[in-house]
Length: 330
Image (cartoon, rainbow, N blue to C red; front, top):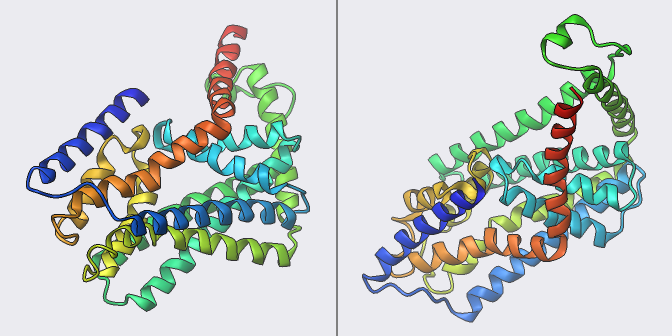
């Protein structure tokens, strides 16, 4: 599925880029554009790693910055090669586990990171609404994306709190057996609920200073995602409207998480053309699309593969192997 989806991504990209290139559009951009885009990407990765380290400190867990950086790029790589970015959190969890972090502490760090991501994304959208009050439909699209993301994170938190209050017995009840929860699965569920109880207890005891620092880092990392496309386009087309250049890519990046196909299956590229095809000057559109995807997608895959590729693949395999073990045991 991943290979087929990536083939679709490349095919759609080639179709969109070559069609414009035949009309005389160039694929290259000046060095200034690339340096600004790289600066935005580097700042985004560093601040995201700081966010994870400081989130861990907020719940009194020591996590070195290098481990947080590895968690960051591992999650990006795992999310890129799996449907709906479903491999991101297992990859991050395995990096934490292999760094000696207990499972309950790893869950705390991951949920704190998701929660702060939601808050910072909401704060960025509020700031954008003030600065770009005439943004129109792109602002409405961003609000919709933030709303879905917030509902997901808050839903996870609510489910965790409810489950943390429940105790399970040694034997699965009748309803659990009807759901094919064998004794081994029921035992694993009981252990998992114990971890959830520890996670909820830890989240309630947050250090406010480190939590605020983590929120600031998260705000900066989300804001950097607004900057990549303007950094690429404005040096060559300074009169291009800033609002759609900054806002549409943010909505596309977060909206891509709901696309089942790994990497978006070409949907991101098509949405990019629909949203920005009439905004970016035609002679620069192919280069803008190509390099925006390089700096927001392909570069993260390369970095994740180099830094934590083996860990990510083990995370995917562990999920598959666990299910096979359950089936064999039954």
